[in-house]
Image (cartoon, rainbow over all chains, first blue to last red; front, side, top):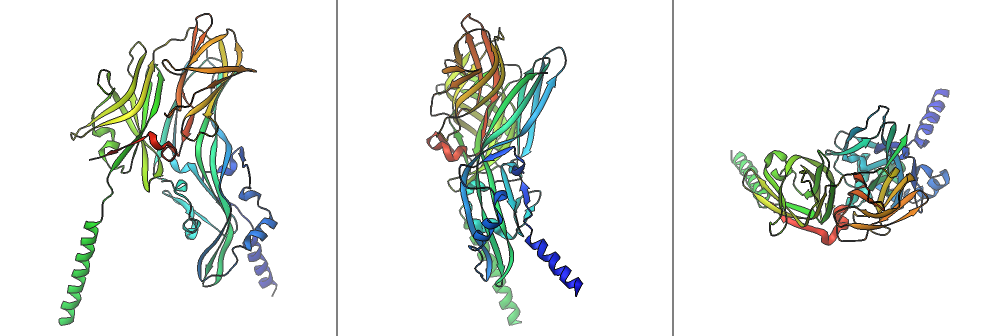
Length: 208
Length: 259
């Protein structure tokens, strides 16, 4: 009997936990994301979830119930340092930085609860076709096969360090969803889609 | 036996009908889009001009450097012409535009050392492929400056730029130059030949304001003219990358049919 109670509690804890799954751009590790209004999925409180889940708890035969909390909210962000290079020699150095990256990095997904994200070499998407039910605009669609490549050429003076930072603008859509299978709830949780619209570069140089 | 013949006939008919439907499906015409842009470069050895075009079919030979026979930059009446050396073509992001998916393809070409300032105001790119196809694509304006820096009067520490407020096209509106020391008063700042822009100096920061114009602008050099006649240059720097260029560019887009 104890074993059954333990098992039930364990499963309940597992299902109840709001683990955040991330896909593609790990935008949650950005230095900062600023929303003029609304909030990020990671900031949803238990009370928020309780309120929002009421919107998706109506049972259905098959498929997803979706509730959008924030739709296409324009955001600004400060990302990571793209590169840092220093010249501790005695003459100036011509430095060329080549960045190769997958274009998919402009799209980021995250999910909580039992909503999952599948990441393959070619595509990142929510599990069980939640993407289709969200009816996101074409702006949120990217090919993940292509690679983007660009070069930055700099003359770095002796005793100088150069750093390149990325910041920019994007859009976020988030909310909660639940999936039903023969009127039985199979998945429920929060989802968030982030897409970069413009990236800005800031170049800094300082004496070392 | 009759049943076998009937089933076989049915399968053949269904197969033939499927084949007919597939063959009669309307094929999406292959298209290439260009967007009017101000291309400004300060010549330095090995510098490349990068032209982004958008194709709805990346299998077309135009997207592959090996398919090219010749590539030239010219003006409308061909009184100005530059034969370019193609380095490579890279594929970039995808964007949905008018219910089609377009891939950005960037053509990297080495700029020649002309030893003088050179401008093509009505810039076209003539691309000749090995299979005989040729395309004349309108690009915008080219400014190629050949200026040497002869001072370091401005000890700059940071460089960044962004769009003007409420402007959505991929065009720089502001460039900020942060600095430690400014030894001479600045008389003029240019980001292209005859492209003088207004600026103001505020607590160790020079703010350059670029007037609005119907051309994209994201990668420019900066040439600073000081009151003592000295010149300082800051090399080309790509200040921004946009992922909604087609969506926001509207009338700046020209559409070409690909053979």
